[in-house]
Image (cartoon, rainbow, N blue to C red; front, side, top):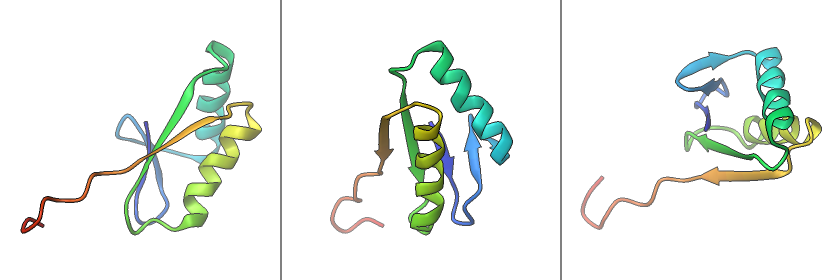
Length: 79
């Protein structure tokens, strides 16, 4: 799961990932299994641009199965 924070910074396994490292990780996933599903979780304040940047890098690396992970809404009366 790739995570994107409100500032648009990308993390993988809780570690920050540079643009170059992101490309390397995605290329590695493609090489290992081109049917890998790339999961992306973004902070609700993350810009659309930051999310699309990661999605675009995935598809440029030949990975076309993408999933956006969302947190379910809190039950009524709970934050």
